[in-house]
Length: 491
Image (cartoon, rainbow, N blue to C red; front, top):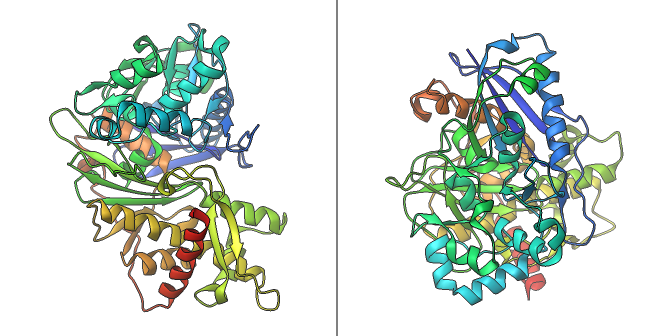
């Protein structure tokens, strides 16, 4: 019995086929081979085409099938993980009306800030656990104000994963977890965010059918099943945003458990049973995949927009022959603190943990007689680690504690320099696991289809690859200098 997981990432589409009995990957693939670009027509804007995602999903599945490592007809359930907060608009024929306004787009910040003040900060935080900020509801309000001809054609509003499920099954659904990440959900009323939607003039008819995260979100249609070499009526039995899905893939489902990722963006995600909110909305609380009306399971999310994207930018500047392995090796030849070179990694739009300010990325304290390319590589990774520490302090202010952080051995966590810097500056050990988003989505599909009784059952054989513990280090002084540089930018 096989499970198919799809991860709709910013950089590419990844798919995994997992053996339900062993929980192990049978095959995986990604498409395209080159990282997908973000469309930025104006400063602070960020878009991608939903139709491109859909095309790339199909190509990735066909590429995985072509490995010959499994019989595609043995796939019994499909799960989808996706980049959070993206706005997808479709018409009555389920066609995308415009590019998706994705997670790191900043155009709706002031719209959300005004709603925060007009509706009342205390009201928004107690009901939505967040400021409307530049989340999906505010992005939709931007479309209403600036593109009325497109707004008039809307039949349904959805998140990126909802759109892919719609294309697979012809059925439009969403979940409380998805609605909460768009600030469409009122936790106190346990219903749609009526006051915010009325304030923006958004029709409740735009919201698809609300279903549990782990449930049947539609059945694979005959035509697309034939095209992809799959069986007709296979269930799409799981959909979740990439960070709740990453937490699930690490079996982070209980209060007090914490996960981290360092891909295109950097995230620390902790589970709580309390309706927590930050008064400045610098960190955000959403319904976790295991949240129910009877049992609170909330994910408190700290996001840094420009982590892996900064590392990629530095690699691209280094030339076509440069790869991440070389960068990681060169960075390891430089002393802790990068001999005074500091990097602020905030060049990918408005940063929520910095009160939605656009600070930009920068190299500071350059000494032309000392600093080399290797210094830049190390300073980038340390600067990213320092941004995690800055955010982790905000999480601690809000009552989130961690005795250990779980992370997949992927992206920046493939670098020993970054991983040890992260552990040393936060003071929290990290357990590394062999996992990724598409694998987690496949396991989620198994839970949704009833193949696994629970996440504990699904991940019973999932053991940590390695535990990295804090070591004696000299990073605190470098961090204080970095924090002072950031304070100057924020002043």
